[in-house]
Amino acid sequence: MKELIQLIQNSNYLVALTGAGMSTESGLPDFRSQGGLWCGKNPYEIASPQAIGTDDFFEFYQMRIEDLLKYKPNIGHYVLAELEKEGILKAVLTQNIDGFHQRAGSQRVIEIHGHLRYLVCSRCGKEYPATSYRENTYYCTDENCKAPLRPPIVLFGEPLDSNAWNSAVQEVEQADTVLVMGTSLQVYPFAGLVELAHETGSKIIIINKTSTPLDHLADHIIHESIGKVLSEMAESILGTDRFTHLKEHNQG
Ligand SMILES: [Zn+2]
Image 1: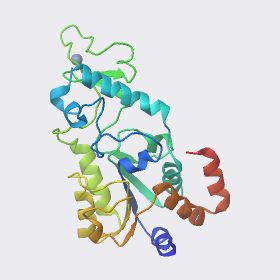
Image 2 (image 1 turned 90 degrees about the vertical axis):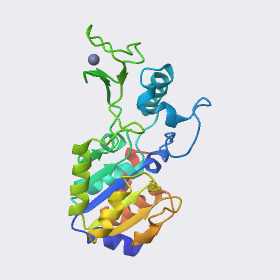
Image 3 (image 1 turned 90 degrees about the horizontal axis):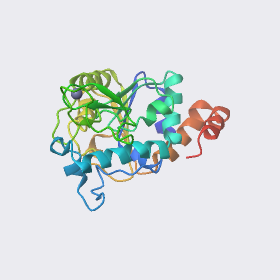
């Protein structure tokens, strides 16, 4: 742990990569990577472009949007926001669509798989509030369009947003230290960012409950809760007073 803290403190350009494990510590269910079923259905089929406009699609995303109100960022999210304020962390690149990093105060967040802050028309792209499904607005209200609304996220089988992806690549290229958390690194091209970090000579730290196929590229691997590791790190880097203040901020 001491070595890890030194590595973070001595970094010139620290970038964090986060996946579902970051938010499951808030209690948020993870349907994408656990292979779990939703109402007996395969989430991979619902979270696909073919499913847009079906009742399953609307219900699934309505539930996911409502989950975001039920759950909140955890201590790990707050520690990352604080490390950014401190000038240590430069950016968060996330696979998560929950917006918890921003809610915890992170400024530079690249959402590689999009977000659920609002809905868009699947044809004309017009924006609608995230509450639209709940208010029984499922289709574009433009008389000439009437296409189903969808969240601006990357569904299975869809390409990534090239702007978000290019920004993520640039951040990793600039980084000298990469902190990877809560991702099993099985989904590409996201996992490729860790390979890129390795190619450009970055120090790589992986914090994940289980091992990943890219563990051999890491300088440090910790199979622990992210909140626990980041808490220890924050207490040492930010000092006990500021860390205690952070904990008051959030008990999750
Ligand atoms: Zn439309």
